[in-house]
Length: 78
Image (tube, rainbow, N blue to C red; front, side):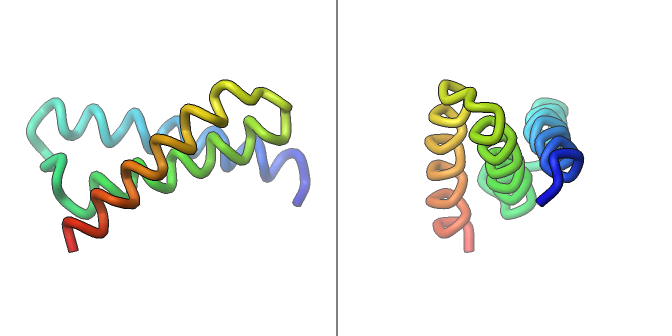
């Protein structure tokens, strides 16, 4: 995968997590709903990918936990 593609995925990840937070904060999405959890799951994945590529392991570790929480919450929401 090209560096530019990884960068784009990383930016998507940051955008998705912020979008999930904003939509939940304004009552547009429920935090226990599938769309909210999917935004968090794929957002965390994007940040993990770009963090590992850049050898920034702290945000990668944080987002591994974030992804696990989103995955478990998604399973419970289904």
